[in-house]
Image (cartoon, rainbow, N blue to C red; front, side):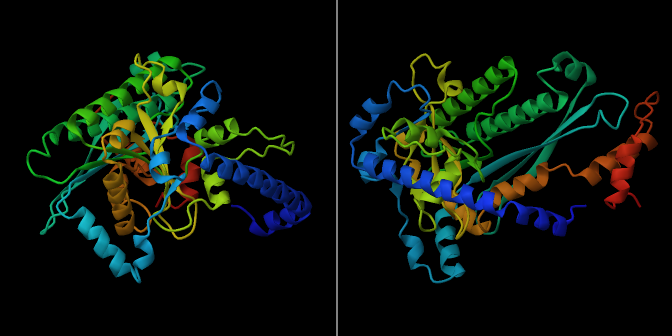
Amino acid sequence: MLDNNKVLEKLKEIVPEIEEFLKEKDKVLENYQRILKTQSQKSLKEITHQIENKEPCEAIPSEELELRNDFKVPFPESKEWRNLEQALGWAKDVLSKRTTFAVDGGQDFIGKQLNLPVGIVQTGWFVNHHTSPPSFEKDSDVLIITPKEILDNQSKEMSAETYIGQKRFSREIEKAKEFVNSKKGWEEKGERMPVVFFDGAFVISLPRRQIQENIINLVNELVELSKEAKVPVVGYIDRSNSHELLSFFDSCDDSSYEGEKIRLDDSLLIYGLKLLENWGDRTIFFRSRRRDLFQKNETNDLPIGFVYLRVSENGFPVRLDIPSWVFDEGYLDETIEVVMAECIVGKAYPYCLSSADEMACIKESETKRLLEALERSSIIPTLKTEISRKSLTKLASRGFLL
């Protein structure tokens, strides 16, 4: 149990250091504010030329910069709302008779409690047609990862938990692909544009190159399929630690700033610059230049981009990973509106993703009940489960053992 009083006492001892850090951070933000102002006055062609040979630059503004003449896109409608009912009314109009799909995943590795390595992946999804009366599907499925598969892929660089995480990611992608396939031809049928919500970034960094490449291939397949079906897919990151936007600003910095370079991330940068002042404001669409996204792309296209969007009165902006075709073919604004509408209904987080999370989450108490059920069952007569003493003590102290 954390002793808050002791923590506060220790923090008092380092107040001068904290104040010095905050002063330096303000200086860093002032420098970025200057960069932002300078770049806002340049054309996209000038910016592209400026950063094209700068290797660390992992993002580039899209053509939306010249359309908006700014790095942000305001959402003035939110200023007109006087109460939650008006916001909900707007969201209802956006979502009415529109199908949204969300997928999320949960995982567990019970090798520490069991006398053999077994992984569990649970994929949850939520399909909402936004009709009256309500019509939706909320379900999940389970994948058991066998001891042989885990041992074959486990190494010093790849833990069992990391491998199970890769399987969870791939199952989520496959489920999203199933839905996208099912919505092919939505325009010909006179339906409103469906939107897929994916919990998290499209590409995650993993230690083993082969696994990373497998994930990139899965993401590229999803992006291509979504383009073919004209179904936008959104990777929703509630608190991003990405540095792509920051690398763009750093690449544009031609000043002689010599202060300490405090390492921010994109969310901290946007928040610190007060770039998105009102609910619903967003950045322009940026194309991601991350090498792991397009190194396999023979045409050197940049298949995925992102925007940062403000969906709460206070707090950091969320990041949306979005395939570049969504912007290129004119579907971006409508896609963003659907995201905002889901966030209004879900109170600053997409309602559809919350529902998918409910189906995917594997709680510690549920794992405990599973282990107890395994001990009592005769599914595997020769299996003797051994819940470790440490695990048993932790479960008891947290109220999971009656």
